[in-house]
Image (cartoon, rainbow, N blue to C red; front, side):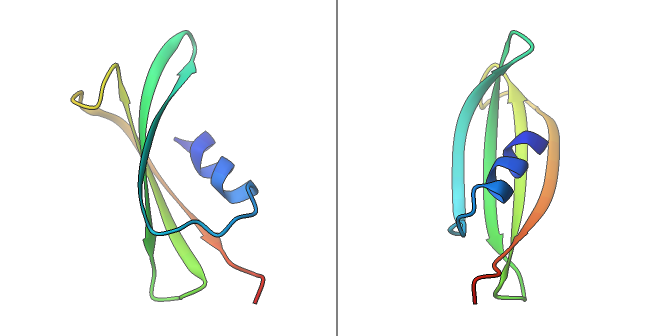
Length: 74
């Protein structure tokens, strides 16, 4: 989950609000992540929440992490 948040933070792009999903292999296991990007009261700050599950999207959440990304290009 922290890896996904870090990827977003270093990408240099302003993330759009919404939900994206994907998978990644780590420690010889396939992990399913859901990234939710939400606005905040500050229009130059986005909230990133990543939920991680094992095996498939129907499994219980193993962990959830929250991070933020700011827009500095204004």
